[in-house]
Image (cartoon, rainbow, N blue to C red; front, side, top):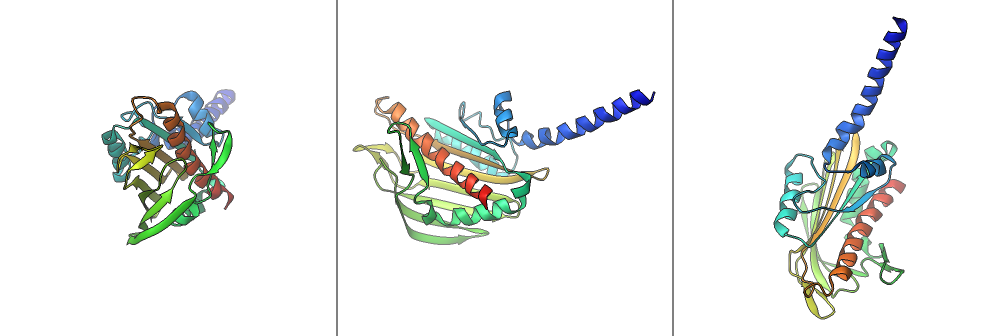
Length: 246
């Protein structure tokens, strides 16, 4: 009887221990066992979304709904996702620190980006100039002129807001993005979102970048895919790892 009672108690403890991660990760959907293992090992999960109708974000709420709706309506060629679990030791201070980093848009200059095509590191942005700034509840909205090699200069809007334990970040191009002399991305057709929130005391980050681009009937398809996906991943990963070091 004692052995049976001990075994029952042990089973209940194990079930309780495994329930918390499961409940936390219910904020996401459609992740494979390998992808869940990546997150469980404390590493950022970077993946190409299967489609605009099957994003990994399952969390409820108005901002999550905005992300899903905007990406779905864009009919994007390329969609990349980044999912990150913040270590418990960093969790309480992580979102406020990240909010400050996101407000410093001029600090985006110099974020390292590894080019697979050229086998070298570039600056993600080599120039950002703020031309308009406005205040939002818990944050700001800025319009910038910026340059991101190998594309021509373009104008973008960034907005970020921190409301308690929820961080919202949006970005979209306001003017055409040109590549090698042709118009690759129309205004509003490249969006980046970053959503920071908590579940069961754990801080989670979900980033998504989506772009609808004209690739000259596939001529520049692979090159543009690598360029846009790599830059989105570099941006979110840099911010995440910077937050971890603070």
